[in-house]
Image 1 (cartoon, rainbow, N blue to C red):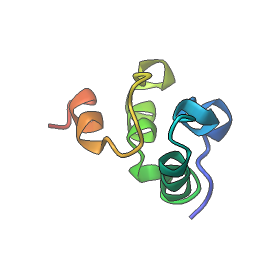
Image 2: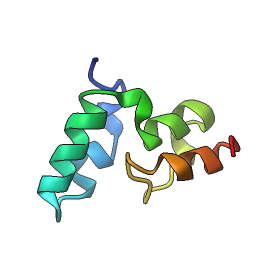
Image 3: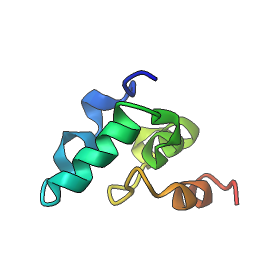
Image 4: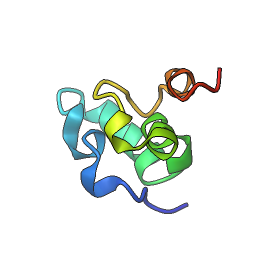
Length: 72
């Protein structure tokens, strides 16, 4: 497992959920610093480009990511 290649420009990693630091910390550890390929934001970014990642898409929203990329 390696850090996500999109960390520097990711709004989520850079404190999008600052009002819920414990939850954000858990998600960052799991997705950003762990299995980045499971992150909903990463999935959409890879399929459609970073400009098409919704601002309200959180790493754990894989179902929504699949809908966005047309996989479901």
